[in-house]
Structures are given as C-alpha cells and as structure tokens.
Image (tube, rainbow, N blue to C red; front, side):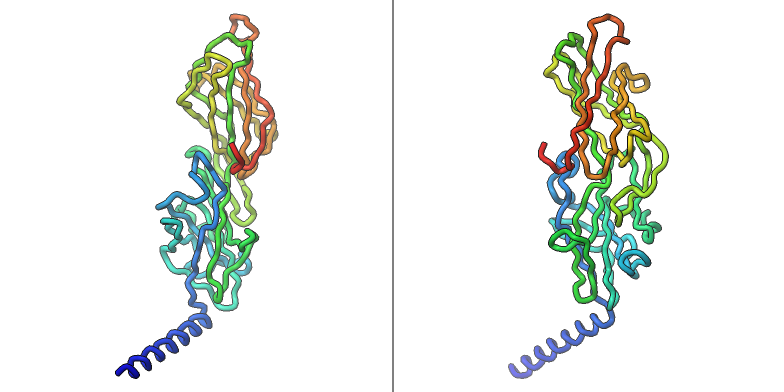
Length: 302
C-alpha cells in the first residue's frame, strides 16, 4: 500500500512537471507583481509603500511596450494589502515574448481605453497624489517579464510636482494678518501623463487652487504659515501663476507673481514668501515677495 502511495506521489510530481512545461510552451504563466518602492511622499502617502488596502492599475505590453497589450493585460486592477499585490484577473505572458509592465496609482477603471497610449489622465483640482511606475530590475533599471520569469518589480514615482509656501512677515512689519485663504491662480488643470516616458504628454485648461491653512494668523515675524499644493508639471515662464493671500479668495488682499520656474515631476519646490510693509496706512504700500524656489527631490529630508 505504501509503495502504491509512493508511486502515486511520483506520478503526481511527473504530472505537475509536465503541466509546468506545457504551461510554459503555451505561454500560460500568470504574471506576478511586487511593489518594491514608492518615492516617499511624507505628508500625502506615509512612508515608502502604498496605503494598505489600496488599488493600482497595470498595463502589460508586447513589442517592448510600443505596440499592443498582452491579452487580458489592459488596465488590470491590483489590490495592495500587507505589502502584497494581487491581480484581480490573471494575466498570462505569451511564450517567446519580453513584456514590460507599466503601473499607476490610484486605479481608475476608465483608463482601459488608454492602454495603447500608456497614458493616464491627471488633474489638479482633487490634489490627488498620482504615482507611476514601470517594471524594474534589482538596480531599478527598466526590465521585462517573460513566460519563464513572470515576476516583475514595480517602483513608483510621483507624476506631479509639489509646491510648498512658507509665509512670514518681515522683521520690521508691525501689522498683524489673518490669511485664511491661500491660492495659486492659473495653474494647469488637466493633463495626460505618459507612463513610459515619465512625463506629461499633453495638457489643457487652467484652474485656481485654494488651500485653507489651520494656522493662518501672523502676529510676529516668528509666526509661520505653510501650505502645500500638488501641481501638474509646467513652466511658469510660459504660463504665469499668481500667488494670492487674504480673507477673501475672490479678491485676495495680497498677490504676487510666482517666479519663472519649470515644475517637474517628483520635485519639491519650496518658496519663502515675505510680507513687507512701508509703515504707511494705505494697503497699496504693502508688498508680497516670493523667493526663488529651493528645489529638492520630493523624498529628501524635511
């Protein structure tokens, strides 16, 4: 009886090996995806991992990623839980094909029509922290999956730029300010981000962004008002952006043009904003100065 059991086990192993070989020759190997890093977002996404219980999307492409998508590899929803990624639907890599995988966060079922462009829509109004990524090797270089190695590593980066405003009074400014509204006027509204190129492919429209800081009273020069905005990559030398501060967002009492800067994906732009006063009663004598930005990677130290 024991011999029969052993024989059955041996036959089972042989059968499994045969099935594995058959699966490889047919290209029926399910794709596996692992998130190996996220460019640290600190105040928006905590740490270097996606939020637990979140979803992201992937596109598995043929022809080095420049032609068609793999069958069932179009905008696949991936669930991310406890550091593990689970595809909602299995994706099978064809035999004799090197397949790159493009990823984005957060998942949107409407992006299926964009498979062949490898572009996702991004917008500024919701202040969503869009991420993009590609399959990479252990050195974070672009890589491929195939039927014999169907596992891919995804490293996410920021699709948008981040603008930080640090607002203070000048040392000799004796006035007090209540500034419950802070706005960036005339920033790009909508764009399409190319997952392969890692840049904004096209854009349209403009929008005024509004923030309501919890600490907005400036009584002394030590008081600080800090606001962060997520913005689409753009060049403010080509499309002027205005900073507004005040208690009425329809008519800001303090305004100033933002310096000409090319905002790029994944970069943090920190501007020091100073409210000066010439000690004259007229509001027109007050001025708002915006420094040139300090530019750092989004994941650099605070």
